[in-house]
Length: 203
Image: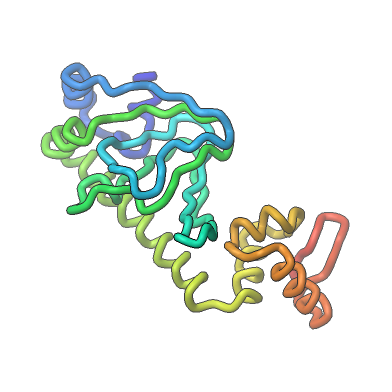
């Protein structure tokens, strides 16, 4: 497990002696989850850093009316909850759900703070991770708040090449399946999208 931690993007290039000393004082804990398990719940306190060593997760936001929106999908190796850890109000704005069987290493916030104070390489890695995740989130907000459904479908197809499962893509785009089906049908009629044996693709 230690080798996996050293290979994580957060600690890449860092001083192993600093990390070893910090983990001796506060060793953290190992956690495993099955597909569909909630790793963190929206609005719960965020007191630890989650290092995703194996598997994948998705970040899901649920409104007071029960509407669910998938904001991001992350695969190992990656760092979870980095942007929420040191906030004035350290709470998860999203739920983190296992998208497959996962293994994580959970590190206490104060332990991470000590590592960041002593190792500038890890601190720079941490800042890069926060910045990259924030940039991705701003793009997602732009997609959902400013773009039409047809634009979001086009963007999804550019990134993923095909729509094979309408229910799954509706979940990712945060729309009802019938709404997605109607829009795809319109885009097929317009020649923007075509149906193939591999699913719906750009025309």
